[in-house]
Length: 84
Image (cartoon, rainbow, N blue to C red; front, side):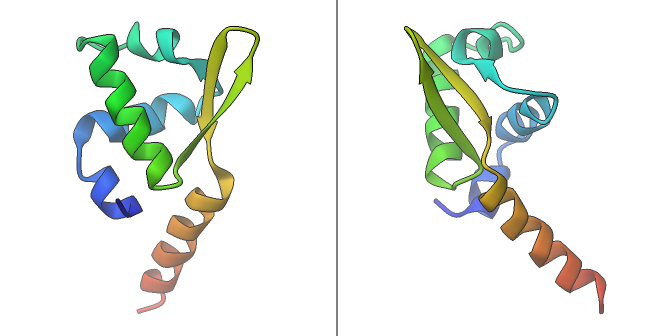
């Protein structure tokens, strides 16, 4: 899935906005949404595949944060479009 396809979903955009404030565990992310934890996991998987989010393991926790490289690719694309 490419980054634009991943961002087509409003829940995924909200997850990105949430993670822009700082890293969170999957449980903390799920606690901010009115959908099931497995549904959040599927959204996080799509965002990871699109290289917009990365995960690191800390003890028994999966900590999610924005993937700077993927976000930078989006930023470059938008900046390129802004020139026109």
